[in-house]
Image 1 (cartoon, rainbow, N blue to C red):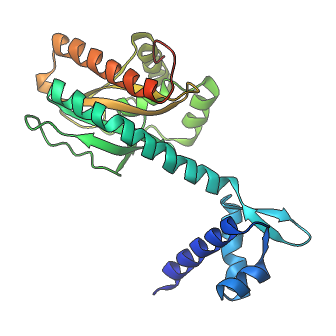
Image 2: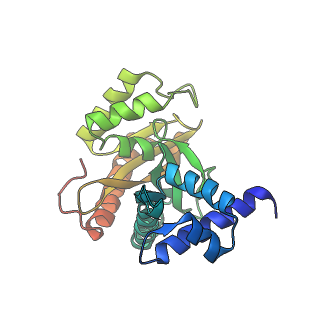
Image 3: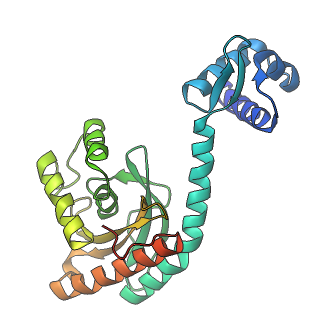
Length: 258
């Protein structure tokens, strides 16, 4: 076992031990109970504190307890598990009705992650794979979520992300993206018109939880050559209906998603 894997396994052991302990734990206690050298424990605990997975309970005693990072990670898992369980049959219904590939995506560190996907037998096989990452600003899923952000959240996103072209249609100007997000809010759905991938046209809507926060989005992915006004109208009705259905099962109470 190489050093990196050993450190990761030890880090997980430390988190599990601290989580199961009724009282805050010291470096010496971790070293003794887990049979890990104090120096290694010290270094691993320092990294876990830096990433908020552990927090210092008592600076004088140098005792530690689980940090907010561990809670956030657990919450993400629970939310995604619940989200996928609820949304999976709706995605299947959506794909069966529009005869296209549909995706479910969530945000992680300013990236879009595909967490569920249903492919129609009569449609193309797309490049989006489960677990893969993509940009928010170039995808219909990502823009559907960005359009729910507050002004401060959008500003923070813009400060942290470089708007780089994925295709010749990608929006790479800040003001243009802000205008597009305004249009999304007004019409109730987002569009990626060959902005992320040549030849692909997607329509998406956000999924909101009981607090009204957008936690995900779903989209219909089509070949651009198949798209016309009538098809767009049908798809937007279906994607909004599906997103609202999932949102309501998560406790969302409003009539519209924006």
